[in-house]
Image 1: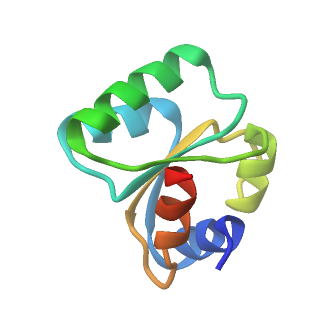
Image 2: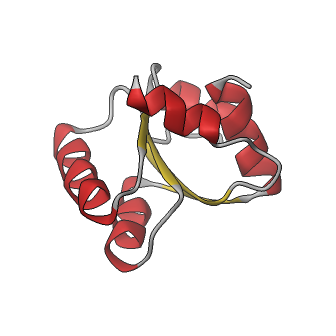
Length: 102
């Protein structure tokens, strides 16, 4: 399963949160299963997500396209710079976590 398919399935059948602020809040208070960042996410968001994710041992998947494309894959009519997957549902999030290790 490729990353785009895994993201679509996680959004459709699992529990996901969209937006940098909500993702950062979750990293501070809870532990999402994986965090997804768009390639053009603001550098301060990338830095803070990276720091918090490492502290909580949460994998980060760097989406290779921009935030408009990530929003479109998620079925949203706006940009999505960051998102968190809380419950993957039918998605195989190992596709996301493995891609982030490469």
